Image (cartoon, rainbow, N blue to C red):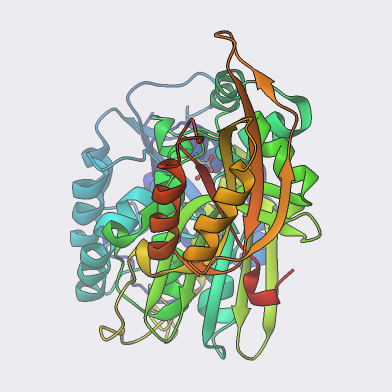
Length: 458
Ligand code: HSE
């Protein structure tokens, strides 16, 4: 059906002072768009009471009508660009994901003077610099709270709540699907594909779930977090990314024995040499709060020089959690649009971005390591491994040697599991190669980084 023209501004430009109603167009009616639509419909009265203005969905665009949503009084289009050209829409919510057609759609909406709210972390991480520049030229806002850590207001916290701080580091579980998989493996011994299928059915996983399990989704989010933390341009291509698909139940169990949990962490750190941005499976002491963040929940620890270490926790995926952040962005735009506050919170937290800090390569980082080595059950193997580590200046902090494994061909191997002291990755690469070259070592060394949070954190 047609939109209610009496409610339309008809101006096509959002920056109108004292607007009492903001017309919302939603592109994409999947998990995010559908969740946002439902929230706005169900809570209209309370939203108006809180905001003092009306947020009204007036136009919805998606490939097909979804009978789950009553759009009978709302304009419907199958072409999202029709919505971007609709002069009555003040704020376009991009809830489709992916680059095409989301990128040209958002650029078109900006060109047409519309504010944009997007949950599209990939798009912001890769094209955000261009998008924000276009938005600045047109005097509109592009808001993206829901792109990172679902319902947790982490962008708001970094940009506003922690504005007085120099951020030293942050570390987060920022992919709900991956955390769900690791938790189910650790707690119930379930297989990887089985849990992934459930995460897809629950609407947590990306359209291409390798984005979740290989850390690409987390790298998109980390890119955005690092820019907001340190005031640098978005640089997704510089994030080191390693997935969880090679994590075995055996590693999960050995880590447990040593007092650790394996989590898929995104870590950004400012050091004297430059900025670290990395996503990889990580051992964290089971005493840390973040080690106990399970299922689809996300958490981000942020260490500021003034506030110290702070922890943000909540659902990282799913319709309701994501809609919570989308609607919070709609509030901000509706509150500020056309007022003196418009544009006072820069999209990447800082009015001017730093260009003088290098992003460090993974070889330059320093941390502790978990090593699992499969060796023949022969006298002197342990001594040889220790010797290699000693030759490379690497300390052994903890060690367990398990009972021998008898494989199908009758070979007997022993798993040797150890934790090292702090060492530069470049040096660890050399030590790993030397261990793998030992005659008695029968397989590739499994190596997982350990994060001690500089002795800080929650
Ligand atoms: N696939 C993402 C996740 C969705 O599992 O966290 C939320 O960004």
